[in-house]
Amino acid sequence: MSQAVLAVAEQNDGVFRKVTFEALSEGRRIADRLGVELAAVVLGNGVQAASAELGRYGADRIRVADHPALAEYLNDAYCNVLAAVIAAEKPAVVVFGATTQGRDLAARLSARLNAPLAVDCLAIQVTDGALQVTRPMYGGKLLADVRLEGPLKLVAIRPNAMAITPTEKAGAIEPVAAEPGPTRTVFVEKTLDTGKVELTEADAIVSGGRGMGSSDFSVLENLAGVLGGAVGASRSAVDEGWRPASDQVGQTGKVVSPALYMACGISGAIQHLAGMSSAKVIVAINKDPEAPIFAKADYGIVGDLFELVPLITAEIQKLKA
Amino acid sequence: MEIVVLLKQVPATEAFIEIADDGVSVKTQNLKWVINPYDEFAVEEALRIREAHGGTVTVVSVGAEKTVEAIRTALAMGADKGILIHDTAAQNLDGLGVARVLAAALKGTAFDLIIAGQRAVDDDNFLVGPAVAEFLDIPHLSMVVKQELVDGRIRCQRTVEGGTLVVEAPLPALFTTQRGLNEPRYTSLPGIMKAKRKPLETKTLADIGLAPDALAAGGVRITAFRLPPQRTGGRMIAGDSAQAKAAELVRLLHEEAKVV
Image 1 (cartoon, chains in turn red, yellow):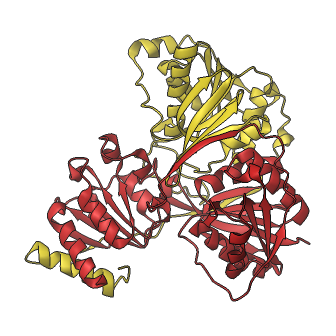
Image 2 (image 1 turned 120 degrees about the vertical axis):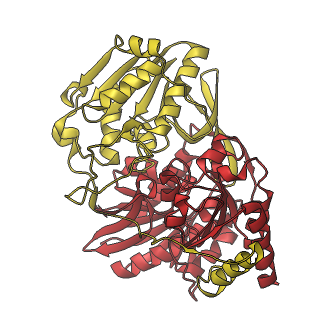
Image 3 (image 1 turned 30 degrees about the vertical axis):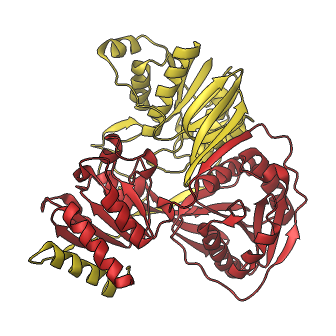
């Protein structure tokens, strides 16, 4: 009998990522189906006080590994500690957020513990001891139903895909005697723009393509700002050097799941369409009425984006006023 | 520097992917096959490191016989030799199974550095690179956009949500690639001619010391492929001015779609 479902929290300087609350909420649903407890696992340095809030998302217990060597994410140290927690808890399922860190850690752990892993899960069902998950493949061109079997199963959930369910209770904090062990990787420095909304976590994305004509994306940045969202780009805009590679949406960029995706001056190459296909609502703005993007959009406007986008921005501002 | 590149052959990203009749695989006829784009960055980076530090670049792949084409392309780009592990017992492996085969193939060879794609753009598993590093008991650094080799150590700039991290590890190590690392070179006709004479070995599981049953069914199995929800094509917003169209769009996003 497994002891619990574990949900692995991800924090930066004591601030939890939104996907952590999604992972806890989904972990709670899986734990309820299995009739077991949900334990959150937090790794970091000086994170004990901040960890108390995880009880509000369904964790019965909050295992905190607090250690100077865990101050920054290093996969060997984190993997050593998490493997020890798993050995003690013997969970049936461990839930991660499918972030850069979550995928990295889950992959290494999967090999160490010989445990099946599915990343970028959009939905998870429990069936007779196995997990049945739905995840995109081929950059979002297909959805795959995947079955995970074995005593321990690892899943990493796609940010924005699972509902956050706050609860009324407070989980109990239980320190973990963390032993990061000798680690080979060394942290040097980090440069983070925490004010910027991350594409994969954004509720709204305004993307520009070849139709932008230059690196001046200010009209899109203004609209994204009003929506509290992020600016994305098509591959052509990245290839032109107008936007950094980290902004690219598509099969060789990021596959995104916002509530609102606005494609501006993007014709709609198949790789791009796949990367945005799990958006809830898609708006396309393009001068060319024949652009393939219109067939994949919920709402389309034919016209000059440099004229339309500022007008849309002003209308949304009016609405929010 | 002995550099190993892990390579996978995948359908080209511009390919239209159709579900095969069995429901759990894709139709492979009429597909154009290419080096996984992230592995192409790995080949390019390996060649640049060899140009700077000397050594050899070995490309290793697990796959069907036609994977030879992708390895030959890497050789035409400039890699020195290729190894294809092809075995009927190594078909339909899950990600961990593939990583096990690659790690077994590398166990007996000397290497300083392994470079792998962050993911293959067909499975999108993000698993093989880190898993190979774990099986070989070496450090790994993922999603690298810049690397520097100094005194037997590698320093990598990794992309993460909202920024970058700089992390260092001693060699031997493995790193995975991120777009922005480099611009892969094209193959030249002389390169293609030269590639024909470069060593390309095909090995079975037995050749790399793996018994077929060492790869018992993994814990991950695709039970069905489905198409994502298909949109029927947008409602075109009409209006006699840009202002009218903008106002109508925002009204619909607010009242109908409820996303604004």
